[in-house]
Image 1 (cartoon, one colour):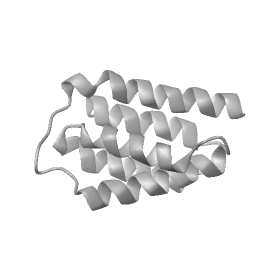
Image 2: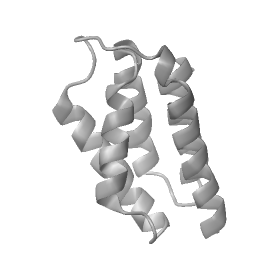
Image 3: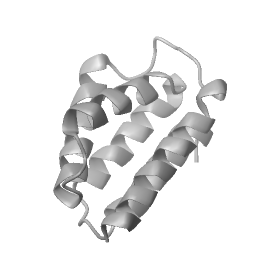
Length: 107
């Protein structure tokens, strides 16, 4: 189970990382407070599902990646991350990938 979660976390990171070139900066996006709160909830859940996850590193990475997404996709992605935080651990990896696709490609 732990290896599966790691694969999904890496998939999330890859999907977000791959789209960074297409992401821009826009002041109409989510606020830093909204990004911090959603990333914290998401990373707390990631830690609950996988004890090897460092919450601090996860939050910093999450904030960096969300901050680099297009503004019009930030809020929807944060909504997805908030939803992931309320999922059971078995559903969490698939939700994580969906949130990454939302940010990167607007899906």
